[in-house]
Image (tube, rainbow, N blue to C red; front, top):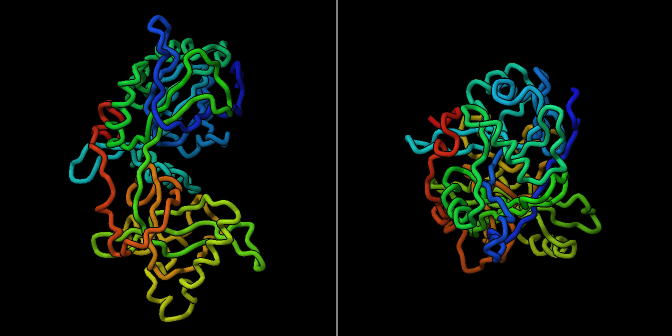
Length: 383
């Protein structure tokens, strides 16, 4: 490639803040922030030089082999020579005719080692590219230009689908707050605010993000040891969390993993009375005694066990210590992805006043539905 900027370029990042920032109080001042929806997909720096297309992940790992459909869309809709920053997303219709929403699980399945599987998934779960910044066009490097100038360049590209889109944006914080509530129903996970006068700053947290925050009561049913744990000084790495489904089965929903070192050691000692010894009748009766993935074994979706391997964890020891599912804790989470927490949950407190059987999906707040087709008109999966 002979572009004005060469790969790899690490994307500009965002730091979390509790609320959407307001514009400056001075009525005569130009807007300091531009607000955008926070897309829930794979961050992508896309380079095009003629037919040569490279798509880098957030960690600058090339992804184009997994997304031939996106490569094709880039060739069809982006300029011959350019570098853009965006997000690869997959939209899927909701169940029983519900409005389309983002599907991160379906997107994750696109990362597959078999070329035949990649081709099939490109046809059945076709991805879209949402662009929110332009780093270069033709021979011009725009990274040192203010975001206002880069957004003008983005507008000039006229990316209105059906496979490559410019993200919606506004300088009105009231609109951003409306998006924060409404767009969650389409699978988006918050709002990003970007300083309009700032240059592009690779690998710097130069933007801010506001994400949804909720709490849930969950059942503790196991733990994994921390990588620094030893026989002499055992430490908890993560707590394995469950919620009961409509049939009373304890579904694995994710982990809580952020603890100070001293707390990790104290947790290990605290939980020993709940440990279920392998090979005992009690172990056979544990809801997660089968560490296989039923989605592979019997086709039952959404019941992935905490010991199951995946393309992301190949070769990693995912064994865990089973605990009697008798203790309830409150955790913080941002949003759900299917039946599981999308990200690591945050331990809040123990809930000795709650019975494990009362921890069901019914407690989880359901976001208001929003038709993703209004944001990505004509995109695959929105019809």
